[in-house]
Length: 561
Image (cartoon, helix red, strand yellow):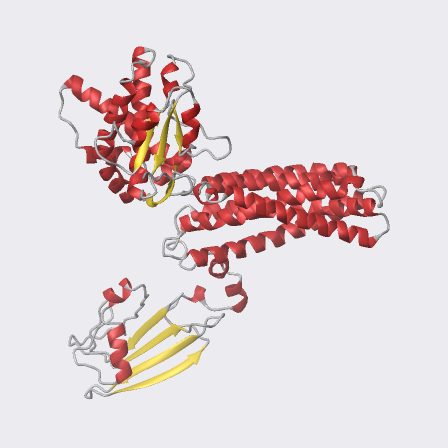
C-alpha cells in the first residue's frame, strides 16, 4: 500500500483550497521539478491511485493570497516489512525561485494521519491488511473477480477437512503396516516404497487418458479428485482389517491419491485463470499455494489432536480404536466433499466445451424459432438478429451456475451428436455409402465449409414420445479454424433442433430421404446468417471464443484429397 501525506506551511496570507495548490512561479530545483511533474494536480494524482491529505494553515484576516513556502512530503518506504516513513521537505524563500531539499527516514506517522492508525508492530502484523498481503493477491479485491473470495473461503475449509482425514487415515495405514510386516523393518519399508511407486505410475496413466479435459471441465475433474481422495483415505482407514493384504490395498489407495493430486493440481491452473483481471495468474497461483499450506497446517494440527484423543480413550493402547476413528473420519470426509462442491460452484469457465456450447446454442435456437413463428402469425415487425442475440445469449456466470459437474451430463437436445467418429464405422452398417458421400461432398451445403455433417439414418426410426436412436455426425477438416469449429457445431445443433421439431410435428421423420437433406440445408443457411454476429455478442459478454474444446484435439480431423 502506498500512502502519501503532503502538507504545506504558508504565510498567513496564503491562499488555501481543498486541493493541493500549485505555485504560479516554477521551481528550479531539479528534484522539485520532478515532484512537480509527478503531482501536477490533485485530481490527476487521485486518478493515479495516490492519496493526498492536506491540512489548511491557521486562518487569517488578511484576504490576500500567496504561494506555499514549504512542502513536507511523507511516503511509506517500499521494501520494508514494518512501515517506515521517508520525509522529503521542499522549501523556498518568498522572493526567490531557488529551493532547498531535505530528506529524512523515520518510523513516525504523519501528523495528518488519524491517531487510530498509529504504527504498532504487533498490531500491524496481526492486522487484516497483513493477512491480505500474505494470503490474497496483490490489489485485492480489484485485481480478481467478485467470486474469488467465496471460492477461496470454501477451498480453505476443504483443505482443512482434507488434512484431518489424511492424518487419521495415515495413522491407520501405519498401524496396518506394522501388523503386516511383523517385526521386520526392512519389509515394511519395502512395502511402503512399492505402493508409492505403483501409485505414481497410476497417476501418469490417468493423466494420459484425461488430457485436455482438465481445461475444458475443471469443475468436474476437481470434484472427482476430491471423491477419489476420500475413497483412498477410506481404504487406508480400513487397511488394519486385512493387514496381510497391505501392499495391494495401499497400492490401490495410493493410485487413487495420485490421481486426485494430479487432477487437483491440473485443474487449479485453469480455475485460477478465471479469477485473474490484471494478468496476475502467477500471483493468484502463489497465494493459492499459501492458502493451501496454511489450511494444511491447521488441518494437520487438528488431526494430530484427534488422533491423540483416540489413543487416549482406547482401552488397549496396542489396539487401534478403529470404530471411533471411523466415526470421527466420516463427518470430516463428507464436509471435505461438500466444501469442494461449494467452491466449484463459484468457478466461471468462459471457454466453450460441448456442454456449455449446447446450453448457449439450445437457448438461442429455441427462442429464435419461437420468435420467428410468432412474427409470422402476428405479422409484426421482425426484431433485428443482433438485438435478439444480445438478449438471448447468457453471460458465462449464468451458464456456470447451471453447469452440472457431479452427475453425468445430459444434453438439452433430444437427438444426439457424434463428433469426429471413425469414418469406416458408418460404411459397415449395411445401408451403403450414400450418406457419407453426400456429407463429404457437402451436397446439402449452401457453400463450401471446413466441416462435414451427416445425419445417421437411424434418426428416422424415432417416434413421438419415444427415445431417439439416431444422431447427427460432424467431422472437421484439418484446415478448420476457430470460426469453423463454432459454425460447424452450431450448424449441427441447428440440424438437431430442426429434426426434433419435425419429429414432434408429424410423429416420425419421413424416410423418403429429402427430410434430413432439407434440414441440413436449412440449418446451414441459419448458421451462415447467425454465427458471425453470435461470436461478436459472445465476445462482448465475456466468452472466450478462442479457447474451444469442442473436439478431442486434432487427431481425428479429416483430410480429403
